[in-house]
Length: 179
Image (tube, rainbow, N blue to C red; front, side, top):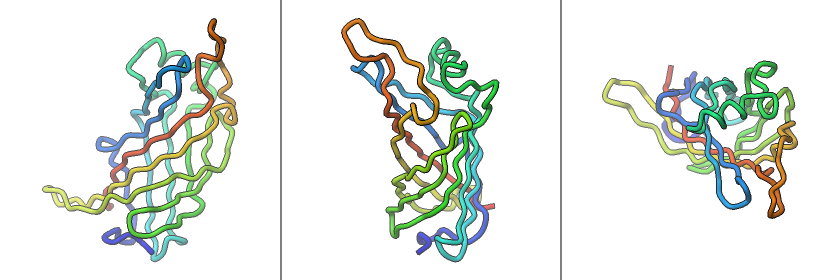
């Protein structure tokens, strides 16, 4: 069942009110957070969940962790290799759920490698803003193995373990605007 208030039609990502980010363990003791500043996404709401579509494209070079040196390293061939793979993408293949809770399954592509993922998504509602735009909000999360996507660079720690953890938690807080 389509969430209440989410009318059939095209909804475009409002990137200025959205965040596509992640966390990954660093040195085994803390987490580093990063996000992407340039994301485009289109949600095509059908008459049912099965005829609705979602796709997203992320500009890999827009990676931002608020540390210029780390950002340059992440954009290099050691990680995203933005020269050869300028985009990350997601295409939904299935949506299930009702009310506020959904499972959105799809194909995630990073560095030219595609794997299926399932996001736990919360529908945060629909509102009309003071300028007359109808907006819908969603929050979502999933975890991936970065090694499965060819992101294998690492460094051994003197105390044992590695510098960068394998598990990456992807976090979404996104707003879409009805076209």
